[in-house]
Length: 256
Image (cartoon, rainbow, N blue to C red; front, side, top):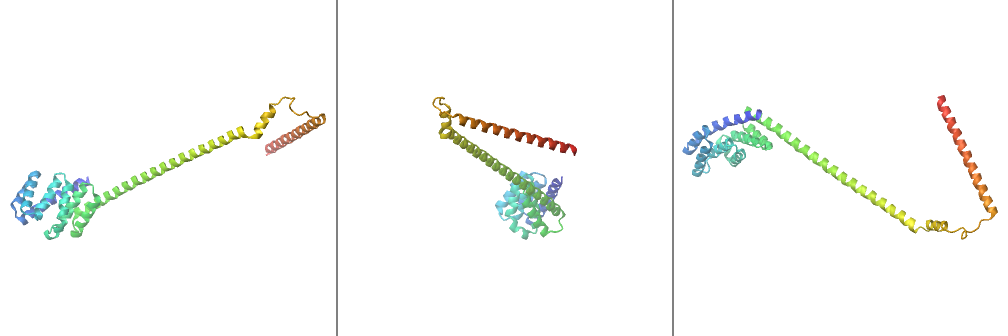
């Protein structure tokens, strides 16, 4: 709601200043343009101000009032451009503070909050007691801060998204490398199975007939049998000891 109040205040300033310039210049086209402006006939007012500028291209009043008319025609950017073009001559006119104030309103209408803040600041330096300029300055500064925060948030979100995309790309690359290493290991295993002499020799020996295999003596066979039985007894003893330890541990835990 504040912004509409500011625009309304600006419109009152436009009317008052326009009338002042009309008295100062006493030019027929400018006076007629001011009458059209007051009646809300902005297209007709534009024609009159343009005629005044054709007769005197340095007419500050005609340019200033033309800028105000463009603002009323919902062309604030064009109006501000006209005010900027005559800002250098504003101090001599005695209406520099009003020019900066109106430029601030036009910048505010286009959401150029940085330009609005600068314009209101310039107006307050020339007229510190301008309450409307103070209120508009505070409002424009708050809007500028909000805009900057939004831009920063968008940039942070973009950076986070880029970082996540890069992380996903790295993870995908690592997964491919793992697959490549796994495939390499499979190749080595396949090669070993096919070309390894030990494995191939064992297969060949297993395929030999009993007649082809060397005969084992009776004594050697008995020694092998005794070794197998001793190994089996050692294994059984080890298993019994482990079972006894487990039972002892369970009993201890139960006592607790």
